[in-house]
Length: 350
Image (cartoon, rainbow, N blue to C red):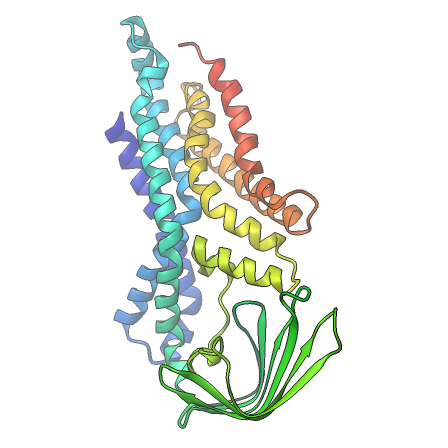
């Protein structure tokens, strides 16, 4: 049972992402060739994309493997024969449960691996673009701890900045808001940026606003290398569980709305755990595939996958708007499938 389950699981978990990669390559091949990317680097970029594309498909892969492995035995009356010889349905599918647990562990690992491989992929695809220009003008950069850099001109050849404003929105006297403005800044390797000739404005609720002028200032949090300031900011899906947690904390301190980020963070756990939940849902339905055959199994699996992905997007939107708690929004699809699965599982003739 475990062997049959695992063969179908691996085929589905790799097959769907590879199909997505082929479709994406077809759409973007001209763009990659215009950037003078070699075939090897293009292939490597898609290899780095596999963990991210596999992460979302793992519950569907478990469902396909469950439906087809149990369905095949149902059609040949092997489950009936097993029951007649004293082996219960629960004992019969125990190896599949072990496979679902392994899939959950793989999903948790992929959730942490995907941000790392996504960064490597973007380095390949955007590496040639970032080296085309040595200057960037009039842009803002959202840093950690709720800080925002507004930069007039950034030079990479001789690392320096002309005109910079650093803003941090606080939350009360213990974490006040401030604005630092400086005429120019120079980057010093390993020591960060040295700001020159500027002022720091401190805003508090309990005392009058304060302003300090300075000839030079070192902001110990302003350590981003010049090249990093030219890159696109990370999306929540490109952060690991802990990194996203630190980002949420910094955004909360700045007074920003973080419900959507909280949902994204909890989904990094909820989606892998759904591999176990989906087993409870798929195993009872697989015993009814005797008449429908393979076509029934494919239709059932695809329909369930579409419904599950739609529920994730729906609850993500609801949780992001604060209509329900963010953690509940992330777990709600799994809870719904789990409740239905337990009911179906309890009605199976063992």
